[in-house]
Length: 323
Ligand SMILES: NC(=O)c1ccc[n+]([C@@H]2O[C@H](COP(=O)([O-])OP(=O)(O)OC[C@H]3O[C@@H](n4cnc5c(N)ncnc54)[C@H](O)[C@@H]3O)[C@@H](O)[C@H]2O)c1
Image (tube, rainbow, N blue to C red; front, side):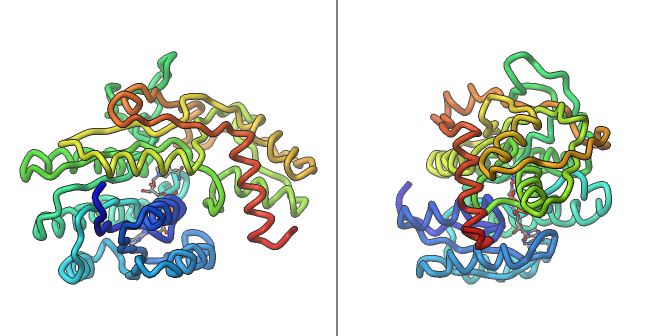
């Protein structure tokens, strides 16, 4: 990718932070956008952002993407070559509590970004979708594939992510904008999201609090280490496709109980388990068939869960000052 100005939305978020960091390391200029909302600990978002601000090639704009005029003002004032759209209201469970926030941020917010991009002739957009689009589809033996039907999301969050893919298709058809959608499968790692199981489990174990284990720990997830996720995003930014969707996963599932075992081992401490039933909107197993991403993006995840969690716990101890 020739050196360029990349707009990274959600740059104070988990994935956005790591993508912005990698782009800066490669010498790109990054225009970061985030509204720093309080869905989870705002100080973590601010710390990620302060880290990025140490690099003079990073500029930051605290704006809400659901406000079209704020988005337009930003695009007018910046010379943007490509967009990496990662800002979203994430989280399956909270989408049952506050659905309108999801449609506002994820659907309207995305349209605002695309409309301004169109106006300013920005032709390349990479955006975050999610494994949630697969809903409760029966699991094929080689994992969920981009060619599977995805018309039956089982959460509002999953619905908004599918809506993003359909929106991208319409804008590609109408205006020829290049879109690559990336369906992430449970990203984890340093500077991660406190609302995700591996993070909240670590905190609870250290504080001697019970951890809620849904479906008796019989939930299988395709955990993808953040550096692998970033590799996928960078490859997508480097190689624009007219309209494509790629699974960005690890292609291997790990049972929740195995994950807990790894964390216990790294912390040298046992968890107190509070077994809970499966939650509405949750799916019991997700894993990605990544052959499409392998073939067309050259995407090859490298990090095994044990190593990735070791890195996460090392960061956690350092960040929260426990070592
Ligand atoms: N982390 C995962 O495992 C995962 C899995 C599937 C999909 N995704 C998608 O990847 C993207 C990044 O996820 P993440 O894990 O970094 O989540 P995150 O919540 O850490 O990051 C999203 C960022 O967007 C910002 N944001 C939210 N609403 C906004 C608004 N209206 N205006 C401006 N900024 C706003 C938030 O403040 C946050 O910093 C999201 O689109 C998410 O849906 C993530």
